[in-house]
Image 1: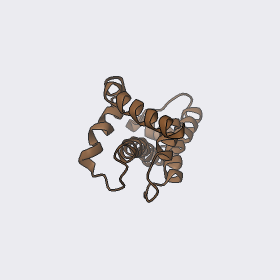
Image 2: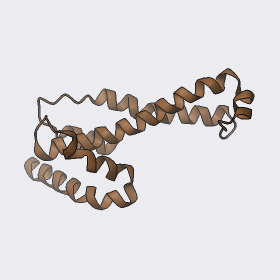
Image 3: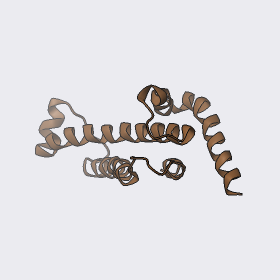
Length: 131
């Protein structure tokens, strides 16, 4: 969340990325997965027996779970795109410019080696401009 917020501050003025949309997509999975964990007694199984056990709640959990996964991917997309928009200081970055960083964020233990130098460069430039 903090990374997205700080990168968002570095965007050019005429961008079309909305931080409020990111906030919704960030907090929905946290809220949903926490509630699902509590109400199912520590987890659930999406098998035929598990669906019968949870009843209509189980049927509701499948689309909510899929939407939660979509939200997680949206957050990765948002951070990757905002990072490239801040790096190039342009609003019309195309997917080929940030798709690699999307996957680097997705596989963060390996991807951090690619992302960290760019973040250092962006925040060093911002620090220099502020002083």
